Image (cartoon, rainbow, N blue to C red; front, side, top):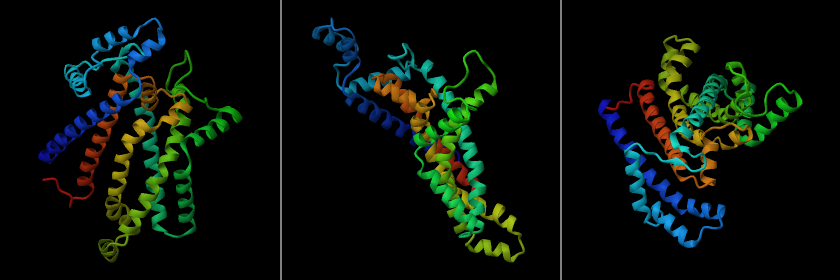
Length: 317
């Protein structure tokens, strides 16, 4: 296990290095640079001033040389300054990272707690009325655009009923868990509903397949009750594909909950990355996208470790 973990760690570092260059290269292909923005903000700057500034900041050098200069600065602990916020990148990044972790952590927890028992209930009685109802609701959740659902929830609970705030992260001057939780209800509900359908469908499908295996028939023949068969023998085997889907969703939701964060004015990583790219804030966008890459790699590594716990036949010796 230790050797496998070290091998995966080396692979992750290689992938992270390749992705850092790809992201840096793509950012360099974007039209405009910070000097162009400075010129548009100050028409008195001449073309000679622009060239001198590009030489000063190294923007006139080849992109590979600029990348390795940036990489050496990262290894020395200098992640740069955010042009938009005029602060160190990490100072801007940590609050948004904490907000996104809270939003996605609650959403994932709710989605898993609801999806697993619901998928199991549908699999135990396939093609029954309850199964058809669960499938209908799951497909409805998959089909709903997140921005449309967010607007619907705001209209219902913030405008018509006026029981929940429409956006933000807290009331000015107010503190406490209760005030913060009121602002989290609608964004958490939106992300949960959008992601829960896939988990229900995968859980149902894998549980139906698992319940048809020979070892399940053997357990029933030995007198095991239905609850023991489902939750002791079948569940661990059926969870493996679900773990894969959850691991792949972590990185996507980390940076992809953009519509939810914009509509609810929630200062998370998705909105931060979007604003940084649109504002040509290269340092902030680079580090934020690398954080999303790191989280995806860690999610895949955690999924591999969970595989060996769920199924003892999977060994990483």
